[in-house]
Image: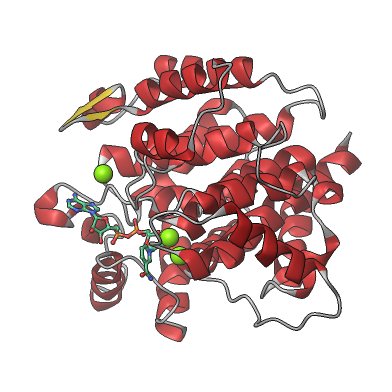
Length: 349
Ligand code: 8NA
Ligand code: MG
Ligand code: MG
Ligand code: MG
C-alpha cells in the first residue's frame, strides 16, 4: 500500500544516513573487529551513555542534494542538481569528499554551469571517475522513480551520476545501486529470496540497452576486475555456500574500496547476508546488522554501509530502524522530511 511505502521511503533515507554516520569513524580501517562494533552499537543504544555525535560526510551531503533537487524540480534537472552539489560543497568543504571530485565542483563553478557534463568527462585524462560517488548518493533517484518504469529509473540513475562520474564503472555502479534499492523497495516484506533478488539484478543489467558505447564493459572491465554482472555471480555463489563465508573472502572477492566496482556489490551482499543472523554480531535488527556487517569489512566503511543501509531501509522500512539511532545521527529529521516529500510527489497525495 501507499502508506506502507511511506515507511519504506523513510527507511531508505534513514538507512543511507545511518550507514554514513555510523561508518565514517572507521573509514579506511583494514577491517573492524565485531566485538568493537557490538560495543559501539551497545553504547549508542544505552540512553545513559554519552558518546560523541555522529556527523554525516560527503555521502549524505550529496544524497541530500539529489533528493532536494528532485523535490524542488519535480523532475531530473542536471543543472539544478549540479548547482546543489556545488553549493553544498563550498558551504561545507570538509565533509570528506573524494580526492578528485572537488575538481569537478571547481570547474562547474568556474564555467557557471554552462555545460554541466563537461567537467566530469575531463576527469582522469578523459577516462572519467570510477569512484563510488555516483552510487553512494543515488537512493533518492530510486525513490523518485518508484512508480515509473525500470528504464526511467536506469536513465535517471545514469544521468545523476554523469554530473561527476563519466567512467562506465562510475555510472553503472549508480545504476546497480539504484536497482538494488528499487527492487528492495518493491519486494513484499519478509518474503525476499536472496538468490532471486540477485538474479533479478543480473537479468536487468544484462538486458540493459545502453546509449553510451562505453557500456559494453558492463560485463567485463579488464584490469583484473570482473564487471558488475560478474560480481553479482560471485555474490550468488557466496550466498549459496553452506559454510560460513569469512569477511576476508568477501573483501577479497567483492572488494571494499572507493571504486564503484569494488563497493556496490559488497553493499548488496551486506544487505542480503544480514537477512540471516551473522555469527559474532549481537544486534537482532536485520537493518542494523547490514550496516554493522558492512562496516566490519573495513575500507570505504561509510559509503558501503550507507549503500547497504539504503537498500536495507527500503526493504525493512522505518519500523525496522532502531529508534536510538535518531539520537546519534546528524540530520535525522531532514532525512525523514525528504522521504516524506519524495513520497508525496511520487504518489501525488
Ligand atoms: P572521486 O571521483 O574523487 O573518486 C574517488 C577516488 O577514486 C579518486 O580520488 C581516485 O583515487 C580514484 N579514481 C576514480 N576514478 C579513477 C580513474 N579513472 N583513474 C584512477 N583513479 C581513479 O570521488 P567519489 O565521489 O567517487 O568518491 C567517493 C568516496 O570518497 C567515498 O568513499 C566518500 O566517502 C569519499 N571518501 C572520503 C575519504 C576521506 O578520507 N575523507 C576517503 C575515501 C573516500
Ligand atoms: Mg564519505
Ligand atoms: Mg579497484
Ligand atoms: Mg566513503
